[in-house]
Image 1 (tube, rainbow over the protein chains, first blue to last red):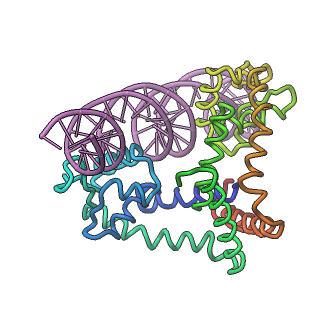
Image 2: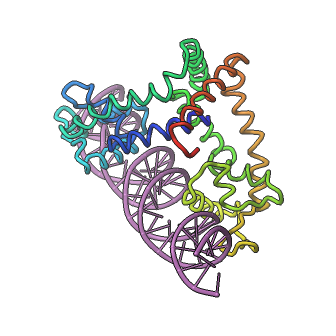
Image 3: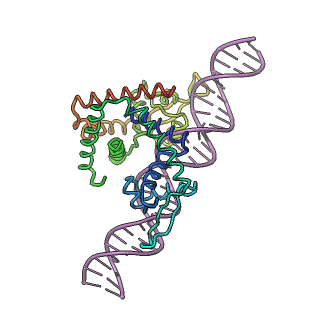
Length: 138
Length: 138
DNA sequence: CACAAGTAGTTCACACATCAACCAGTCGTG
DNA sequence: CACGACTGGTTGATGTGTGAACTACTTGTG
């Protein structure tokens, strides 16, 4: 847990200072940039990220205000919205991604052997399976 | 990372619903309850928890409002404060601790072999060492 | 002793997260 | 087709976290 805290704090900070993106920003943009047309329905984004809908809505509002994404109306479902990544958002994520990947290597992957990594994923799978049993949603 | 997210979300929620404490509350009270007299200077608490001073100050204000801790004036340093755990705070942490420990066993420790745990601490130590080199404070 | 530099703590402004309440549109079934 | 239940999404209140600016006291050095 101490490792995880220190690691994510470090990666957050690097991302923020070098790319001007928070980790939530990065996650949203990463999914949008991979989607067809750079467009996704909020509920799809929510499913991909495992985010609550209100969290997503609030975060998208902040990102919209900064010009990273835009909202469009959905034609096939009058309730719905569509989120588009803006050119500016795409430029930022494309600049940030390689730096971020390099940081992950530099702080984590390069210091762990293949067996250690395998053990780690084994642990992760077992614990997530257990949590899945306890908590019906996940 | 997915495991860590799911695990801490689950443990947070258990702690909150079963004991009425957030994880930050728990951490603060755990340190206070172990200190001599249940008293600590904020800066000591901050060092133990690796928290920023403003975060600590704000959190203590919220906890004070709920009657979990109290602030006293420090006699030897006129700037300083002293944080005391209240009887109510002590009662809560003492009720919460065994439940929390049981949850950790139930969701994590019991599903991991001794070797896996050892590998995990090895990884943690290596990564934290690496982060310590990169980031002068920690 | 005087003053510069550091330390202890608070506060303000803001980003991020949860929950509950709410609107509006869709859909299944009588 | 009508109506109740569900779904997609927003909003408001509150708790949690960071950074910068500020107050007030302490300490080191001339």
